[in-house]
Image 1 (cartoon, rainbow, N blue to C red):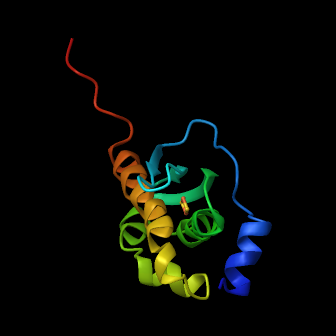
Image 2 (tube, rainbow, N blue to C red; image 1 turned 180 degrees about the vertical axis):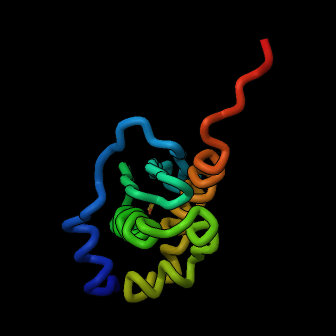
Image 3 (cartoon, rainbow, N blue to C red; image 1 turned 135 degrees about the vertical axis):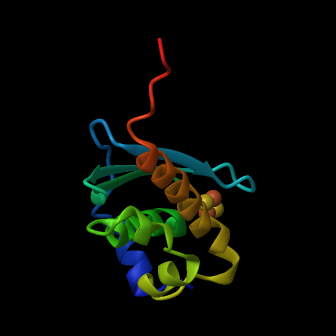
Length: 127
Ligand code: FES
């Protein structure tokens, strides 16, 4: 059912954890199962220097979060915004059709985290 690449990331993810004071962070959930993925980004001069995730989810969600972190590290915010389900599926050696929702929640979290990173630091309101 799962590819070797997907299972390897699920069993030994390289990017699990937290970041201290990320420029962009977001959480997204799968309404069907209640699982959640949290993604955090460290951005330096418009380039994603590091990415970490925490997930309460299935093998696909965890593997997808790990793959997304790897795919965006070293890229610009603009390039990362173009990451899609097809790119993610390719990186994982395929995602079972009935698990695509588990993968796309990671992309949902990524998009929100990128928007927040692009807006960072938030403008202060005039006194
Ligand atoms: Fe819940 Fe996959 S079954 S995220």
